[in-house]
Amino acid sequence: MSLTHQTQPTLGRATIPLPAKIAAAWTSFMFLYVYVDVLNFYKPDVVAEILDGRIWRFEVTPPLLTGILASVMIPALMVALSVILPPRGNRIVNTVVATLYAPFTVFNVAGATAEWLPFYALSIGAELALLVLIVRWAWMAVPRRSEML
Picture 1 (cartoon, rainbow, N blue to C red):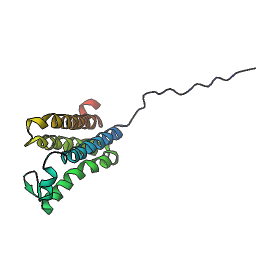
Picture 2 (cartoon, helix red, strand yellow):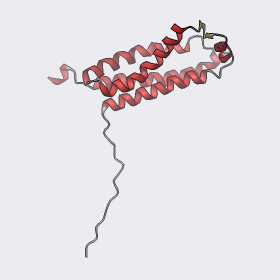
Picture 3 (cartoon, rainbow, N blue to C red):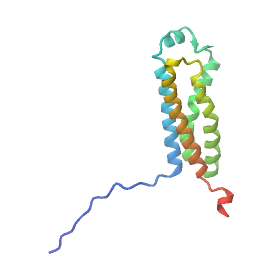
Picture 4 (cartoon, rainbow, N blue to C red):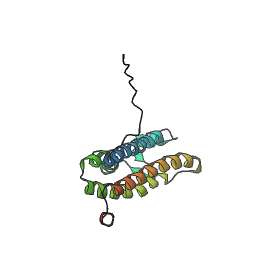
């Protein structure tokens, strides 16, 4: 008589392709980016100012809202591009876009008072950490010519 012993599969470390990691980082970045804006509505007078036709110091106009839409749309498109682009294009586009988003992200602290600095430090710190990961992973996506020799 023989007994068969079945073992449960272990939760090993799955190998996740770099494009999927980059897409996941862009997804997290996008959620943080949007949630910081939504949570900003709870600051005193922000909603009243928006209803009065102003965002921060700018008058609400079609070009302003189009620019804001583009700034939110780019990370959303990067999720798809990260898995669609070929390795070399992935490396270039992700490195350039993530690098350009870093100063744009830091700009969110403009005009903040000292009491709101922890809110912005946490949000900007998390966004910048994700952008650094994106650049790092994108840079690893294609071996450089010197690495192939």
